[in-house]
Image (tube, rainbow over all chains, first blue to last red; front, side, top):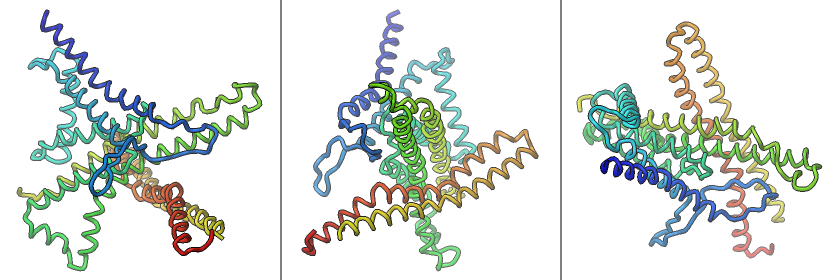
Length: 285
Length: 100
C-alpha cells in the first residue's frame, strides 16, 4: 500500500515535469509579447529575444527558440522517465508496453538502415527524432517552434557532421585526405564544397520547410482577416470586427504545415543522419 | 534623391525574390516524375504499396530541398534584405556628407 502510494506520487511529479516546462514557455511568451496593434500590416519576425547575457566578444542573446527548445528537451526527459518508471521483467502496464514499442521500433529502423554494428546509434537517432518532431509540434501550443530558427537546426546538423567526420577519420587520416582528391585531383574544390554542404543542406531543408509553413499560414490568416473586414465589415458594432472568415481554413492548413510537415522533416533528418553515418564508416572497422 | 534610391532597392528586392522562386520549377518537375513512377510501381505491384509510398515521400522531401533554397532566398529578400540595404545606403549618405 505504502509503495503504491509512493509510486503514484512519483507519477504525478513526472507528469508535472512533462507539462510544466511547456506551460512555463507559454507563460513567458504571453508575458513578454508586446501589444501589437491588430490593424497594422502583417508582421513576420524571427524568434523573440528575451534577454541578452553580456559576453567578452559578443553578447549572447537568449531567444524564444532556445527557451522553447530547452522546454521541449525537459518534456521529453519527463516522458522518458514517466514511461520507464516502475518497469518489470514481465510487463503489466500499458506505459511499459508503449516504451518497449518505441525502443523496438527505433531499433528496427536503425538495424534496417545502418546495419547491426551501428545498433548503438539507436538512442541518438531516437533522440533526434523525438526532439525534432516535438519541437515542430510545439507550435501547436502557440509557441515559437524551435525548428523554424536556423540556429537550432544548424547546431544539430553540425553535431551530425562531427560524427560523420569522426567515422571518416576512422579509416585513417591519409585515406580521409585522399578521399578529397578522388577520382582525380581536379575535383578537390568540388569535394570540399560537397563536404561543407552536408550540414548546410540538412539544416536548410528542415528549417526552410517549417519556417515556410509558418510564413504561409501567417500570410493566409492575415489575408482572411482583411477579407472578412471588407466582406462582413457592414455588420453593426463589434460583430463587424470579428474575423469570421478566419474560422476553418487555417486549421486545415495547420494539419499539413504543422503536423505532417514537421513529423516528415523529423523523419527525414533522422534518416539522413543514419545514412550519412553508415556510409561514412569504413567497411572493415 | 534618396526616395528614388530606396524605391530602386525595394523594387529590385521584390524582383529578385520573384526570380529566386523560379527554383520551384525543378522540384515540381522532379516530384511529378517521382509520383508518376510511384503510381506505375503501385499499379504493377499493388502489394508493395506501403514501401513504395514511404520511399516516395522520402524522395519527394529530398527533391524539395533545392526549391526550399530558393524560397529561403526569396523570404530573406522580402523580409530582411530591404531593411539592411536601406540602412547601408543611409550610412553611406551620411558618411559622404550629402545632405538628405
